[in-house]
Length: 620
Image (cartoon, rainbow, N blue to C red):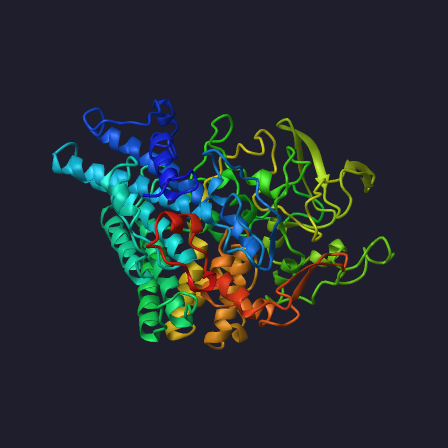
């Protein structure tokens, strides 16, 4: 056997299996448990409490593979991810994303760490499932209680394998527990071949079927999984399978299009989504009411959509599948502030920011359709730029728009609470290209928002706390993997693929639109299958921005060419509110560039260790 380096799946699995065994994911009470790297069978797995502690370790091992998925939005056209705040060389939140390329092109060779951490999560869930099954076989504990814990672990395993096939296609599938370098399980894992994606998908669905049959309607605690979470994930797996079977995946060797299989998957997805929508009493946050918009240049009152992405919404029924975080002084906080906010907000780094083009996607409150496109104008050379109609630097241009616009973005003269050392520094106005400057607005002095990482003319308000008291890396927001608004939109997509626009699907999309105080879809938007798909995609763009969905949507829909142009063309510029060209993507890109962006590379280090692992076609 070849030498095992610290760059392999095996090392990651072994570390996760030991150091993360007792790492708490959902309950603060588990912080009192002593960590260990070796747990003997006769000292552990003796009570239901032991099994629960181990399950928390599985949550903890899985969370870092999903709770920074917002970086993936940078692979689309509306978000810029200029890097990551993740670190390397240690096991901490975010390592799975370290080194990844989150730009619109050339990204799929940079996720070797994600691959390894996903398999680390798989091993942790295998460890829980296998040992609890031994408890049941030995009549230790209450069988029904233990089966619920197995259901949670299997659902985590299903989620992890789903991400693996979504990125890499065919992947090895194993359910044994890797415990040490010399074990038979290790030897087996190091010789495994990649299973066809269809077989892995079927195994994923079997795990979810078990979870559906065992999990309660409501999770045992915030972050604990439930039947609606299982149904939602099963629906999403089938929706993606339907998309792949309909649109093809030519970069995945041996994969074939099959419209009949696609329609069967869409039908199964729709049934699960319909159950989630109708059978559990779930509602959108604040009943889907838009709340209050507030005035231009203020943040005292913000729409309900904004509050949905703050800890205020933790435990809300819209949040179906979430990963929890501990907050201050727990070493378990999320870093949304650090990634989405700028220097004026606890020294945050603004790794993720909106692109200029997203603002035009927010429709008008009067017609429910798109407004006249904004025009970039440089206020330093154009004296009328701040007052010209449709000027991107004229605050009045943003009136009468979808409430989610103000809840999501800040444009010139919009404000948020500045923070230093957990204390408020007062309202901080954003003015593009004016960083940390003294300004007077309507007779009141301010220091402008320092966001030196922004090149579009906008920053995010979404995910940025509008109150002091928590550090940039100490958030306690429960990150949503699946929420009800997404289920509404996935249901509409699945039914539309099979039957075209249906009344209940149209109503589901309208419910999402109403939270932005938009009128219902116009007749033209639901005229046929294509028009309704476009309306669904539009809602997915504005509703789910910054949540890590766009990149996966683009690839499953085979939409890269639609967005960026065909191979060999001039590509597409991304601009800013001053009218300047900032970045161009896919300029004279080759066919191979597109192929490589549709499927991720199997890590070469894993193939060096295991020659049975084949490589995806575009990476050979």
